[in-house]
Length: 142
Image 1 (cartoon, one colour):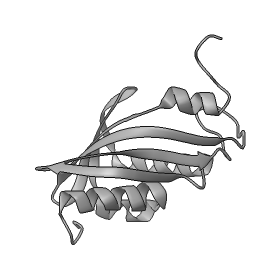
Image 2 (image 1 turned 30 degrees about the vertical axis):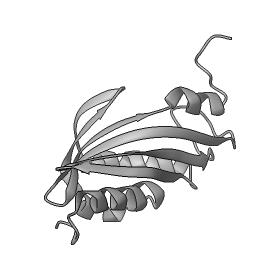
Image 3 (image 1 turned 135 degrees about the vertical axis):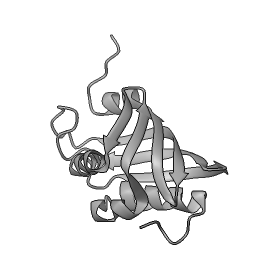
């Protein structure tokens, strides 16, 4: 069932608040289509919504106080671009890194495509090197 408000910016706002900030996996069926097309520097392809739900669960296990603050949403047609800052405390295993208790503070840029009032396609790019460095796993040689 599509969300009541199908304005692309409002759908994107709900995606950020409910999925990323609240980690509300149960509400994801109302926010995202069953099949997701996902584009990011490390992965590019279709995935079932169930896989994205597990991804969100993993992020919230690793960073229970995860908070994504959006600076601005810009919409054109069915596409919404937004960027902002993600913060949180590393309290669970993440990418094979055991909890450090360190805080992360990284920037990210996202674009979502809205279809029938739901997020159907996602592009994401965030400061993974900064995140790993903040977790004590700097990949750059000293």
